[in-house]
Image (cartoon, rainbow, N blue to C red; front, side):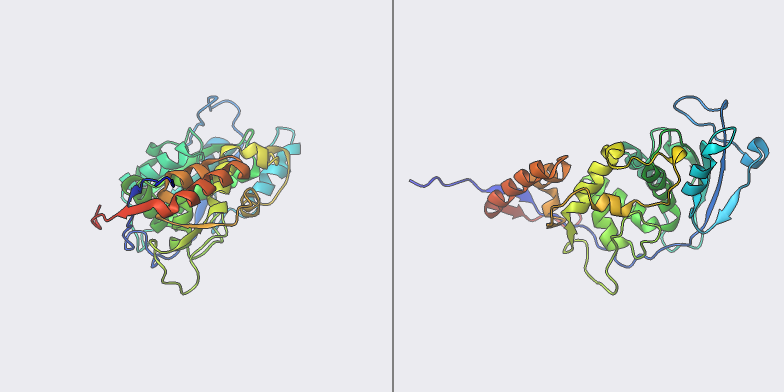
Length: 308
């Protein structure tokens, strides 16, 4: 006698496409930063943040459209008699002309989520945003890989250049209960329209009207990004202060996971799919994907109110 398997009930997922919007555009490119040596003002786990790095450390404060060349500058300083530069100061100013505005609460929560998932270091705290118009961080470079350095700078810069991305991430994680890394990839392919200052090559397709509830996200990016930041030194042996390299991150992350599958936002909430992209190897991930596929015919989605 055939065994009749019980149905599996799941709540139907609906995300407001006006919040995670395919209408968001890239903001203004502008960075203000300095690099210098600090051997006595920081503690082991907390960098000293100067009010005026030019006066306190005798360095130049650069204003530019990006951080291009900064990793090579740090690496090239390694043979100096005083050692390599070991601090980078970054003052992030919110673009007052931006069409999308984040609240201070959204900015602080974005920082909390980024730290919790290793896209910012632990010493970068929400109170680095003194108000909703600017924030200042200092990165401690000792032991950082080139990719960690660029991910940290980029993650903090999103608050200026991609406030729509910040708003979408906070909504997906806090209001809709998505895993952080699934939310990151979903927001990338819906919200991001310009990848030059995104550390992945994922973006919204030109002219696309596809919304968050229908788009399919590449599994390899979700799993790859999670594995890459969780075990960064396993995937990147370029130590910033000991070598000279350009910023290359996207291709490294894209090579971590080889599973060529896509999932909708609805599917990315399934426990088996979450276990799959949380696995640290493709072999384990495939086992959970197969379990999801085995269960798929039994899943019944319960309608939820659209505001829920």
